[in-house]
Amino acid sequence: MIHNRAERVANALRHIDGLLARGDMRGAEALSRQLAAENPLSAPAQFMLGIAIQSQGRFEQAEPHFARAVTLDGRNVSYLLNCGLCLLSMGRVPEAATFYGKARSVAPSNVEAIWRNGSFLARIGHMEEALAAFSRALERAPEGARHAIRLEVLDCLLSLGRVDEARAQIERFIAATPQHARYLCLLASIGRHDAASDMFGRVARELARPGLSPVDRSDLMVRRGVMLQQSGRYDEAFASFTEAKRLLPAPPVTAAIAREVEARIAAFDRERLERLSALHGRSGYQPVFVVGLPRSGTTLAAQIISAHSRAGNAGELETMTYCAARLAQGRPLSDIEAALASLGAKGVAEIAAVYESAMRFVVQGKDLAVDKMPLNFRFIGEAAILFPRARIVNCTRHPADTFISALQTEMNAAHSYSYDPAGYAAYHREYRRLMAHWDQVLPGRVFHLSYEALVSDPGPAIAALLDYLGLPMEEACLHPERNAGAVTTFSRLQVRSGINAASVARWKPYERHLRPILDSI
Image (cartoon, rainbow, N blue to C red; front, side):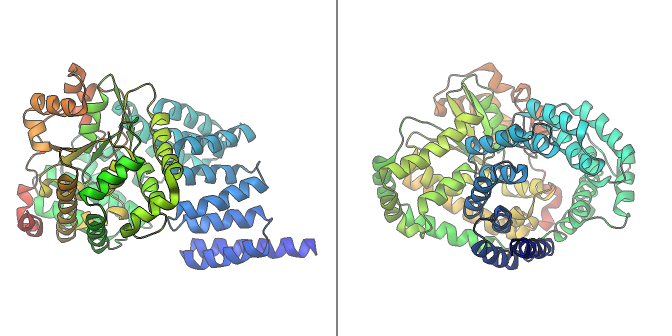
């Protein structure tokens, strides 16, 4: 009987795995739920249910199943690592660190445990420690796993500004593996290459190779577009960029953001924010939120602030997204007061503590932690309730420049609004509408940092920014390129070049393609 049950569970797990491989996430979840209900003491069943739910982006619902699997089998490295990854995906960094630590403790020589611990360290910006972990993992990893680990090594080196070392390693990796696409994309992003360069030919040859994944082909076409742009062949460049984006899944997001903005404007009026902040606010902690649309100068702003001796950069964590969801308790935003009342003062304080502990874990020994998740512009209402002393820096830039910069960057499907001018114009309009609302209901709380003003005359702009943050001017803030901290965003190479106006008005050669954006200003 026991043998038959174990065999049935194993067969069901293989079936679920097949559904996941085919992309049938809902089918996998339904079968996993049935399996877990029939076998409540089966750790593999709980784990697979967590995987099925997590694969749909529902991390908070997946986490109890991973935790249950760990309770049933606390020495399984995969269970521990996936629980850590789930927690990290919600920005619950200290909790995630515990599970990564347990995985290392349970299996100190396990390649996956060493490797994934490096991934965790890199995700929170601890790059030197991550590189050491990746080096240990590569010593033991089978050949099939080395490609993925090497890519993480290169990301670390580029994030630290060690460009020459990264370039040398890329060339060495290219010579050692037939999987060239990812390496070529990274190599092409280093330095300036035009359509007459050897790099252009290398990318073209790789694009001609059969069997490329849509993501690899898309990223190579983006790199090709950048090189065409360097040669002044702007129409060809734009065609390469837009063709690249058409290869990617593009879930519609503009209708959803319009509905969300409408709900937030209705839910967070001035009187309600003042009342809820007075009731629940955690006045002892002062985070700095740097927000805006991606490619609007958020990385530069964060590097300027974190160059100050009293500030540190926490990077782009999902912690505020998680806290906002926890505050809402699954209710519509119109019921935010009832949701907070159901949590009670203790419950709200616990959510605030989750945020604070994550920031303090990543940024240690500093007065201010910079949360540089651009799309936190959506959650300024929740941030104001939890942290009445929070500072919000909104980075603005000409929307056509921001769009062109996003278009020639390997943005994933979460940013599908940036794949075409009409979609971007609609999304940018909703962003402006919500920021105008925050200005109205939180007067004086948001500092608007113009990218164009910053790069044209850095001194006064930086002095005003630091004054808003309550920080005295320091020379280091004028030279963010010297900031030794890791830069994990797409702007990691640009910010190492110092503050300059080279990227202002980059949209003009593309003007005829950008009518929807220009007409929306």
